[in-house]
Amino acid sequence: MYELTARDRERVKRLHEEYRALWEDPDGCRPLIHVGAPVPQKLAAVCEQVENPALMLEASTARAAAHLAMEDDALPITRVEFGTAQIAAAFGCPLHVFTDSPVACGAHALHSLQECFTAPVPPLTAGWYPKLEAFTRYYHEHQPKGYLLQLPDIQSPFNSAHLIRGNDILTDFYDDPAAVQALCGKVADFLLQLVPWLLKLHPPETEGWFYDWSGLWKGNARLSNCSLHMISPAFYADYVMQSDRRVLAGLHTGRMHYCGTQSGVIDMMAALPEVTGMDIDGAHHDPWEACARFPKDKPLLVALGKPDQLPRLLKGDWPGKRNLIVHVGARSIAEGRELAEKLRQASLS
Image 1 (cartoon, one colour):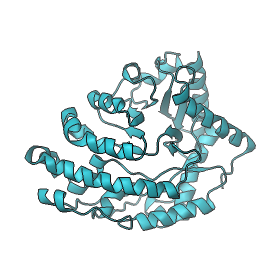
Image 2 (cartoon, one colour; image 1 turned 60 degrees about the vertical axis):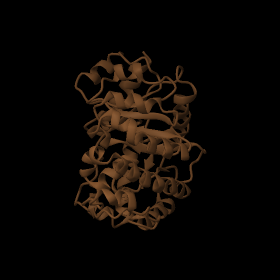
Image 3 (cartoon, rainbow, N blue to C red; image 1 turned 120 degrees about the horizontal axis):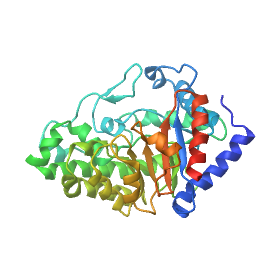
Image 4 (cartoon, rainbow, N blue to C red; image 1 turned 90 degrees about the vertical axis):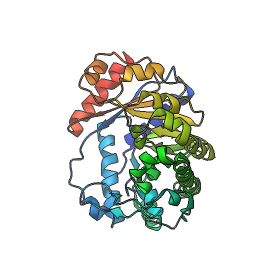
C-alpha cells in the first residue's frame, strides 16, 4: 500500500529541514509548494470510511501518495477524518453522516443563554472520541512505514461554540456577551484536556512541532476560526480572543486557520505571541498585500483563489516574504507534478 521509495524517504528528510527553516531562517528559506490533485483511484464513500478504519486509512494514504507522485513539498501525512464537529458532539450535538461529504453537526445542543453558563465540560470519553482512539491505534499499526500521522480536527473555541449553540450565538453577542465568553471558555477547558491526550496518541517526532495540512508547523495544534467571518473584529477582540490565547498558551503555541474575508482579524491573530503561523484564502485576500503585512518571523500559507494569481507567480513575481507556503490545485497528478516544478523554479528566479 503506497510504500515510500528510497527517493521519497530522502525527500521527506530534506523537507523536514526546509519546513523548520521557515521559522529558523525566514530570509534564507525558499517558498514551499503544495499541489492538490484528485487521486486516480476510486475511494470508499465517507459513510463507509467512518465505520471502517481500513477504508479510511486507504483513502488518507492515497491522498498522501498523490503528493509523493507529484513531488511537491507536501509531506506524506495521514489523518483520522471524522469532520469538524467532534468537539460539538462531545458537548451533546448529534452528528450527521453523509454518503460522500464530511461528517457534520446535525443540530445544536444548547437552547438557552442560561445553558451557556451551566453546561458541563464533557469527559474525554464523550462523543466519538473512543472511536477516534480506536481508529488512531489502527493507523499506528497499519499505515505504511514513513507516513506521518497528524492530529484530528479540533476547530477552535468559537467555531465549536457556534455549533453547540447554533446561530443564536450571533445574537447572544448583543443579548448577553458574557454567555458567549462562558461557552467559549468551556470549549477552551475541554481543548486543554483533549489536545494533550491527542498528543499522546500522536507523539511528535520532535517536541514543539506538529504535522498539519501536509506540512510541519511550530507549536502543538491548529485552531480553525472559520466562524469569525460572521462577527466583527471588535467582537473577536472583546469576547473571543482570550479563549484562543488561553488554549494556545496552554499548548505552548500553535497555528491559526482563517478562511474569512476580514483582514483586520488576520492582523489581530497574527500579532498574538501564541500564534506561530497562519493560513488564509487567496480568494478573499491578495497574497502579495497579505505577505507585506504579515509578521516576518511567522510563516503564512496562502491557498490561491483568483485566476490572475497563479500566472503572476509563474512569471516570477513572488511576494517578498520567503517563509511562505503556496497551495494550488491541479486537474491530474501529471499536471500537478509539472506545476510544482514550474512554481519551484519560478520562486527561485
